[in-house]
Length: 112
Length: 113
Image (tube, rainbow over all chains, first blue to last red; front, side, top):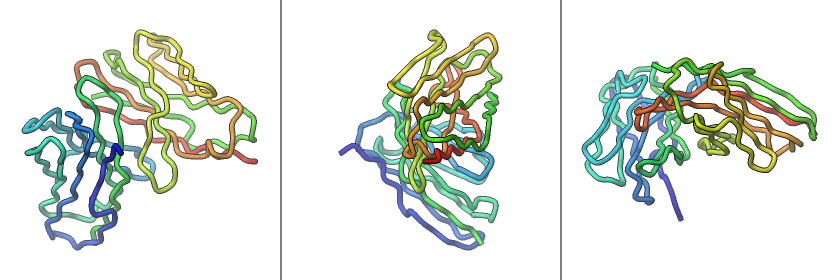
């Protein structure tokens, strides 16, 4: 079954404590992205990757890092989380050359 | 960068009526316009898309229209059903933007039985 998985699904943490949200896909897709979803703001792209070792900033990259060492994984790293990073995060993937994105189930992050 | 505006933010219709959601974009180089449906507690799911060389596309009860000159595109849902209730997002991708997407702010659609 084609899947995009995210872990954890829910996380409550404190300001400044480094965390990683993982994203994994089994579709052999080249493209992967991270989005955050906030009420009234829709989905905003944080980072995207078009292949292994190739990453680019999206619209709101400040405070986030990503890496793409393997095709199937695209972790999102918050080195020093702050309360304004409290949000619902989605990973998405698509086949290279295709715009059709498949979204993961989301990770709800709360930073206190 | 691209700016996508979406209206209305909320929409209530009676079951069986039609629903229309509109989006405008700013970058004339954008060439791909998808629509996503997000049900409660789930990730967005692509329901229909259109490319800039096409004016209209239809899939059963769902259709999308694109006016490149005016830089706006719309989602039309006919014969609405309660299961159409969800949040809908439009998006745009600039030509040559690779995997870069700009989303609208979403429309919460409620279909009243």
